[in-house]
Amino acid sequence: MSETYRTPDSTGVPESAGEREQAVRARQLDAADPLAAIRDRFTLDDTVYLDGNSLGALPRAVPGRIAEVIGREWGELRIRSWTESGWWTAPERVGDKIAPLIGAAPGRVVVGDSTSVNIFKAVVGGVRMAGKGCTEILVDAATFPTDGYIARSAARMTGLAVRPVEPARIADEVTERTALALVNHVDYRTGELNDLPGITRALHSAGALAVWDLCHSAGALPVGLDAHHVDLAVGCTYKYLNGGPGSPAYLYVRESLQERFESPLPGWNSHADPFAMDPAYTPADGAVRGRVGTPDILSLLALEAALEAWDGVAIEDVRAKSLALTDFFLECVGAYVPPGRVRSVTPADHRRRGSQVSLACSGAGAVMEELIRRGVVGDFRRPDVLRFGFTPLYTSFAEAERAAWTLGEVLGALPEGEPGAAG
Image 1 (cartoon, helix red, strand yellow):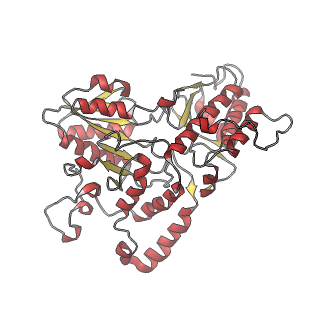
Image 2 (cartoon, helix red, strand yellow):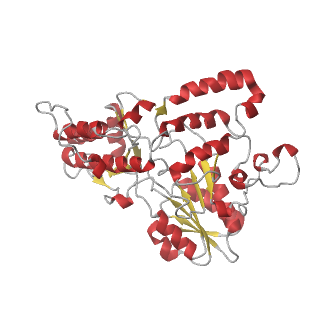
Image 3 (cartoon, helix red, strand yellow):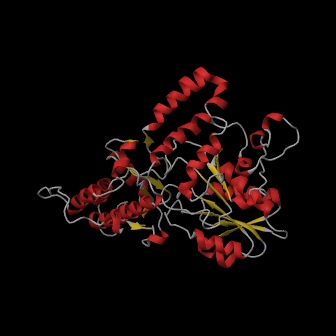
């Protein structure tokens, strides 16, 4: 467990007779948690919500801000809000708020469109910057399906081939014919953290570009895009960044590549002079050339308000709590779940773990349905994986303990050999 989150000798919290040992320790850890007060920035209830790796909880700042946008900026100012309310510059402004959470300087992140659209921009734009003679795109063999679909479509359009490679093998498989590799920072099924610095270095050594999908890492752990010289990166904002359902994604372009980056979607919003209505396209300077069409203002400004939850929060502290939470949950699972009923497929090594715990469990779909019925919300991935996402800004150690206890109750009620045995 992280040094920051060691159980203190005494917290002044009394132990009730017969109380579970892990429940007492959870209360002690919560009492000593430096991020505990951040939880009040979110709208929560008695549900143990461990699905923030799919959809983050609602930050309290969002409803009031959206009411203001609708009532005053749209309702009263109307078209004037593009300038007077700063709507036009929102994609870059919100990008600069996300930038420190992914280790980027201002001017390198633009927000807009979906993750899928931004992957398309990044892959095709990357191929256009690749050296002559490149014939292939490497794709994370365990990638989220959309990444593979987009990469194959981009390859057909650019005359290249796609070759799936396990992330751990990319350093050995990359060649001078590789244009780029598209890799997930965290595996969405298992929660395994891939080696962003090492894979990026290996790609660069072969003359290839590194394109990273940060959907399951941004807001949960340090990324270090600038420090590790990542070329292009994309990510969603509705998971650990809590931007809301379908909130816009973002695109990162390394500063030294921005003059060369040629988007395959040259919309009027990325034109150097968009209101000139020039039939000839001239790209804007910097990350702005990653824009396409008119920004989705309502969801974009909801995201901007949601990011206020990060005020005063260091991503390093978030990572420390994430590791402590997942360590503690796994410990509680070991204490409460009958032996042989589940098996963790998430790496125990902190260097290889994101912010979720995935447990292989026969009959996982039915087990998750029962957990949700009992007030513990995670999710299920076919064929046999229970996923529990830990969002350090609002997840408590008491919730981690309760989730493991409830899982033990559910699986303990099943006879041996019934669904729920480890797959």
